Image (cartoon, rainbow over all chains, first blue to last red; front, side, top):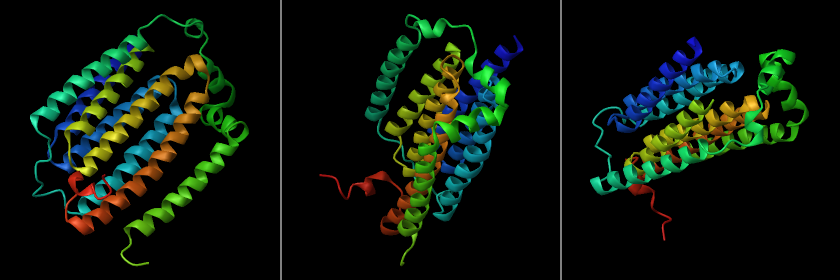
Length: 172
Length: 96
């Protein structure tokens, strides 16, 4: 019961913050509202039983990635005398109409008839967390089944770091 | 559990609408991050019935999002050097 109330509370915060993110004119305000969305999502991950993902969300997303965004906004001095960047009302009407259609399609898919897998009452993820702990439940499959994707992700991060330096530097 | 999937759909749609209505490249980027987070929420919401693999994939998605943010912001900085603005109308150099 308390979990339900907390879920709807944080879901409300997430939706309001997301709407504020796309409607603020000041990029700094947008970024801070996005941080608020990420914190609400971290709370929701924790409520859904994904404790490690909740912590990673705060450390990596709300911490590292948003710092990078704010750093670039301040480096380019976009925080003051920003020009309004909203498209015309035709675009806004298009966005509203297409997003309502997309939402209706997604809602129809989510609320559709249950597949056999959905009716299983056993919480598979909670069983794994029970056995290996919150970090081990993700770490064990990551180093056994997903070891190749893990190495490829490491390579991707290396390439991204080198690429970011090459792109942003004036003269190599 | 279905409520979490609905929240994921709503956040994805808000992010998509943001990409359509804004012209500031950095805010477009933030809307893309919002959409990535909505997809992550769907993975986490389905992990109780589909196993822990959903959460492992969320971990990879977060790592890829970090790499994407680093490269994307570097591109924005180099375009800003040329055009003194981050408006996406300056990003049409390669448009047909």
